Every structure is written in structure tokens, then in C-alpha cells.
Amino acid sequence: MNTRSLVFRLILWYATLLTIAFALVGTVTLFGVEQYVENNLENTLARRAQQAAEIVSHAVDTSDVKKIIATEIEDRLTPEFSNRFVRITNPDDNELYRSGAPADHSFNPALFSERLSNQSSSPYKILLDRNTLLVAVTRVATARGIYTIEVGSSLEQIQSVEDHLLTLALLMLPVLIGVAVGSGYFLVNRALKPVSNIARHAEQITHHNLSERLDVTPTGDELERLSVSLNRMIARLDEAFQNSRRFLADASHELRTPLTIIKGELEELALRRRNVLQLDRETQDKIGNVLEEMQRLIVIVEGLFALSRLDAGEAQREWVTFNLVELVATTADQMKLLADDAGLTIQYATQQSISVTGDRSRLKQVVVNLIDNAIKYTPLGGSIWLQVNSVHNQAHLEISDTGIGIPAEALPRVFDRFFRVDKARSRGGAGLGLAIVKSICLAHGGNIFVESQLGKGSRFTISLPLAKTIASETYSTVHAETDIRNRAEVSTTSIVNTNTLESTE
Ligand code: ADP
Image (cartoon, rainbow, N blue to C red; front, side):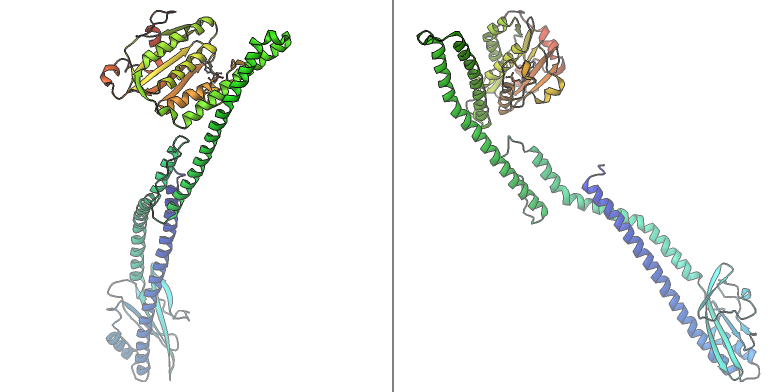
């Protein structure tokens, strides 16, 4: 469980507050019940003491006070039967009457001291043999002096009710908290479910699908406001992206024509009118340098133009189904001369056809760019391998080389626009080649991955969905078991005619 999640923290707060609330309510209830029951008992005892006082005030005028008081009290108050304690003390502090043991044996009256206790307040509590008695005191003034009447009752019953209530509260507390936390978890989870839906959907929105919007449920709550605000933000991002794409497309388009004209004019000057104008060597060299830079600039502008068209979804227009193996073979054939010039060998495996659907010329550009890079970054005597497989409904094209490799820290960025590992080794490129390759792959529903070891070589793997019309049983079994990690070995063993380029058709 994620202890930092909002659900967890809300439940924790909820459970803590609930426990405090339950504990407070329980304590107040227990205390209130105790007070209420004790007050009731106090009132009853006071009434009984009053009755006893009436008996005493009548009896003091008779000859046998002690006997009459005892008889009257036993008859009218029945202290033993009602589990009460009654004591009458005369003005000399001598006991006139003391009730016997109560029927429930809740206290022992014999433990009361012979003398009147010093309790002046009424009622008072006294502990007798682990039992507390609540005693109401009444004084009655007669012609013979002031008589004291004490009527008490054990608090044992009240205490046992309180103990019961406390045990019940302690047992119920965890159950109540458990039920509250369970239902709280359910409710919080339900309330926050739209948040995780919004987060999941928002995460799927990238610059490729900025036209998508989050679902807005018209609940009128904060989550509806959040979805609407996020949608507005995505709309603003979409607009900013569209603007920058339009700018890229317009700028590269506008730059292409003047650059081509300038280059043409310079070539005319440098090649054809060189003798007419009688240009000296230095001027000719300078024009040559400018022409080289101009060519670089044209390549960059062309690259940007290509990217802007890919961003606009241009690659999806002219799609056909074709044999990728054949495309790779013919492209490799065409680039063999370039590889020969660099002292490299290009090898590829002949195999059954593997069909994909897409823009053939764009996918050819992918193969050209990757072979071109492999040639550029592989030293003399090295080799380049090409291999096409079909793996799990995907066509995989691998281009491996024994070149200088790419440092691990640069690998995640090689597909970024204008990224070059380092300018010194970039051999004139502007860092747009791989960005174009990736854009084309993504536009075809595929992707590109790179593995590389510095000083040992690189392997670029392109995955493209297989054409739907091609029955998968024809091709998918060819190399289905081939794992991406050992494909280098597979391609080495399946090489046909090293140093000789073969076309499959
Ligand atoms: P560039 O046009 O500069 O070659 P890319 O986008 O094609 O730009 O490549 C980006 C960077 O990736 C290059 O600067 C280069 O350093 C590195 N790179 C590309 N392909 C290879 C390869 N086969 N071997 C080694 N480094 C490579």
C-alpha cells in the first residue's frame, strides 16, 4: 500500500479523528450515566432519610424511644430487604438504631464505627471492605436535642453497570472504527476514482495526440472543474504546438527555394564562369567552402521540412503494402558503393518476404539514414549487418555495425532533434537524421530502439506492424522464437555471401 497516497492519508486522518471522537463520546456518556444514576440514588436516600427523621421526631416523645424507632424503621423502611443501611444517633452521639446485614450482602453494617462519623456533608462516601457506600445524612431537631439519621446504599450495582458499559465501549470501539474505516475507504476510493482516471488519461496525451481531450463528467464538482481546466490547458498546448509546427513548416519551406537558388548561382560561378571571371585560387577555395556550408544548410532545411511534414501526418497519405525484405535489400545494394568507398562490408540475410503497409519512400529513407549513419560511424575494415524478422505480428529490421558506438549517457537522446553525440565526431551531420527516422517509425505505428557499446558497435532495431493482409502463419513462425538480445548472433549465422550484396528478388 502506498502510504503517501491521498486515499491512505485521508483514511488515516479519518480513523484518528473518529477514534478521538468515539473515545470522547464514550467518556462523556460513561461519566454522564454515572452522575445520573448517583444523583437518583442520592435523591432516593435523602427521601428515605426524611422518612426516618419523621419517625424519630414522633418517637422521641414516647417512653421506649429505641424500641419504637427500631420497629417503625423496620416496618416502614425495611432496610435489610431493600439493601439499605440505616443508623440513628441521639444528641449524645450514641447509636439508637443500626440496620442489619442487607439481603444481597453488598456490605457489612458491623464495619461502621460505633461513633458517628465526622461527616458533616451529605451525602458522603465511605469505603467498607472494598465496597463503597453512599450515605445521605439528615439531622432532626427535637425537644431532647438533635438526632442524626444516616441512610446508605452500596454503589456496587452502579459500579458493575459502569464496568459493563466500559467493557462494551472498549469492545465496540475497534469494531466501530473498523466499520468506519472500511466504509471510509470505499467512499474515498469511489470519490477519488475519477482522479486516477483523469491522471491515466492525461498521461496518455503526448505531443502526438494533443487533439485528444479528457472525459468530462458533468457532476458539477471540483473534479469536473479539474477536467475542464486540464482540457483547456491541453487545448492551449495543442495550439502552441500547432503554431510551432506551422512556423517550422513555413520557415523551412520558404528557405528551401532561396537556398537552392544561391547554391545554383555559386556553382555556376565556381564551375562554369571560373575561367571567364578569371577567379584566383583563394577566391575559388572560398566559394568552395561557402558551397559546402550551403549544402549543409540545405540538408538541415530539408530535414526540418521533412519533420514538419511528418508532424502534420503527411506520411499517412500514400500507404501501400510492400515487401520490407526487398526494400532493405535494394537499398543496401544501392549503398554498397558508399560502403566500399569507406572500406566497409554490408551483409544481409536472404529470407522470405515480410510485408508491411506504409509510405514506401519514407521507409526507404529510414533504411538509407540508418545505413548512412552506420557507414559514417564505422571505421575502415568494419562491417554492417542488416536483418529483417517477424516477431509477434511485428516486422523487426536490425541494422548493426562494428562502429565507434554511442556512449551510454547519450543513448536516451540520440533520437532528439539536433542532438549530436559530439560535434567533433558528427561527420558533418546536423543531428536530424535519427529524429526523422523516429518520426517516420512512429507515424507508421512502429518504433525504433538502439543498443550500443562504445568502441564495439551499435544496433538499431525498428519495429513495424505486419501488413494485415499477410497471413501471419506464413511469416510469423520464421523467427518468432528469436530473442531481441541474440539477434546479432542469428544475423551473423544467416549471412549469405559475405562481401557480396544479394537481392532477394
Ligand atoms: P547526424 O546527422 O549528426 O549523424 P543523427 O540524428 O543521424 O545525426 O545521429 C545523431 C547522433 O547519433 C550522431 O551525432 C552520432 O554521434 C550518433 N550516431 C548515430 N548513428 C550512429 C552509429 N551507427 N554509430 C555511432 N554513432 C551514431
